[in-house]
Image (cartoon, rainbow, N blue to C red; front, top):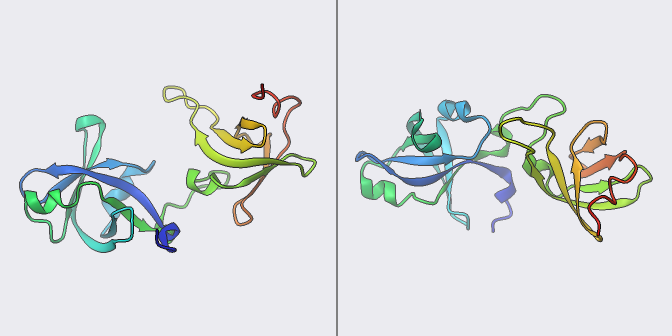
Length: 184
C-alpha cells in the first residue's frame, strides 16, 4: 500500500461495462451522489499501488439496479476498454471531498479515533460506525473495540461531548452503565 493512499477518498467502484462505447456502471459509495456529476477529473485505483488520473467525458445517474453511476472516461471507447476498468475505485483527492456542516463527520475520519471517558480513562478505539436504520434514520452508533470487547456508543452530542479529529480523539460523557452494557 502506498503511503499516500490516505490522501484520496473513494466515491464509487466500477462494476461492469455499460453499453458498447466504453462507458462503465459503478456502485456509488458516497452520500453525495449528485457531486459525481461535477467531476471533470478523477483517479482510478486498483486497491494496490497503481493510481492514474483520468478525465471524465460524461456522467449520469441511473435508477436501474438500485441506482448506479454511469461514467465515460477518456481513453475508454469499447467494451474491452471498459472491462479493463472493472473493480477499480473512482477516487478524488481528500482535499476535494464535500465540506460537511459543523457537527457532521465522515465515517472514515472517525474510524481509528481513540475514545476516552470523562475521567480521561481510555475506553478503546473506534472500529466502525453503524447506521441505526434505513427507513427511520437515527443516531449512528460508534463500534468501539476495547480490552473488554466491543462497546456500542451512540454518536450523540450529549454522549460524545468532544470530537477532535486532528488529535484522533473522542471524549465521552456516558450515562451510567453505558460502557458496561455490552460486556458479558
